[in-house]
Image (cartoon, rainbow, N blue to C red):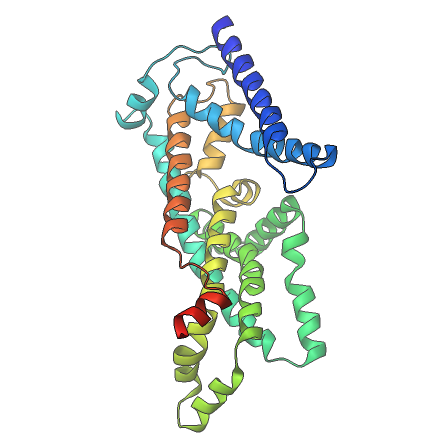
Amino acid sequence: MVIGGYIIAVLVSIAFIVLIVLSLTLPYRGAQTSKRVMGNIYLYLIIALTYFPLLMIVIFSFSSGNNFTNFRFSMENFTALFDGSSENMLDALWNTLYIALASSALATILGTVGAIGIYNMKKKSRTLLMNASQVPIFNASIVTALAVMLFFNAINNRVEIIPRGILTVTLAHAAVAAPFVVLSVLPRLKQMNMNLYEAALDLGATPGTAILKIMLPEILPGMIAGFFIAFTLSLDDFVIADYNKGTGIETLSTYINSQVAGKQGLAGAVKPLFTFIILFVFMAMLLYNCLKPKDVNKKEIEKGIK
């Protein structure tokens, strides 16, 4: 326990010393002011508060201790993740991924169709519907979860039309995420040259063909952004899933909550699982930044023309 406490204290101390040194030694254009120094200290402090907990999870995934102050180096957590003893947790993980993918796809379809419909409305109707569609965004999660649960209970009052489980959680997540997709797609519609769509109709294309061939490629970046927002919201959610999952299934968030709230304590395999998730997100962002096209400025365009 003492060794684990020393490790935490040393890591925190080193982090703050590095922050102060970096803030004092960064080169500036012009005179170095105390305001800039404090600004850099604040910036690095926010970065440290964001990434230090993630670093702690990675470090203590290699510990067999039950808490962060009892560090004992071991690989048994990684072994437990793959030896079959964590089957319930892995089932919860697959349920979470399935619900996230399904709800994100459904929310993307609903949000895209809704954005196209809102964009083509008259100004008053568009403003009214936009304000109404943003209610789930600002509404408290507990209120939304309870409302959706009561809605499904009312539908299943006499005959169970929509059984509680993966389906209800998927529909609930899609309903909550669809407004975020609307907000992602609408700016792309506003940037689009609608004359191209009208020209396609004049040349004999059907509305469906014009949407698929002209409009869809223009709004695709907004749809992709909305899909990933919906996917992240579904992965993060606990309250809506807990109220609507029924019995017999678990998502990763509800499984971990049951572990923490129960007497059995947090399973050791959770920490290496989180480590793999952190590494996956880090590698995905690194790959995205390496593969995304570079911005071409005006000077480079003029140079290329010459």
